[in-house]
Length: 84
View 1 (cartoon, rainbow, N blue to C red):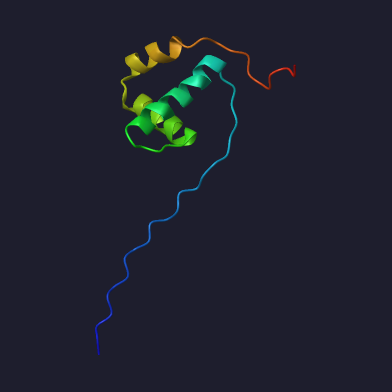
View 2: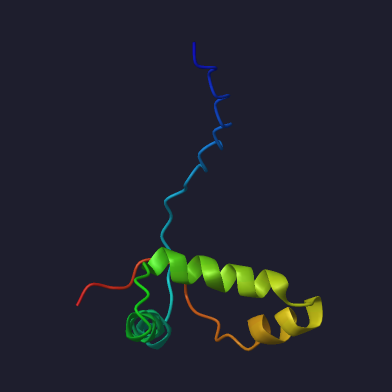
């Protein structure tokens, strides 16, 4: 008989959350620009991956640097935009 290989432990699946948010159009356009840059480097990314990378970059900053970045953001009215 052949000895059975022990099964590798399965990593638990990450629970995903669906959300929506409001952002200025010029900042939303940055997502497309970043996607285009990634494609030039033969890297296919999704919008959510770009946002997650941004969260990782913010998390890696110190409190002072993060505070400067976040305070530099323009305050916007949240909610759904008016229909045209």
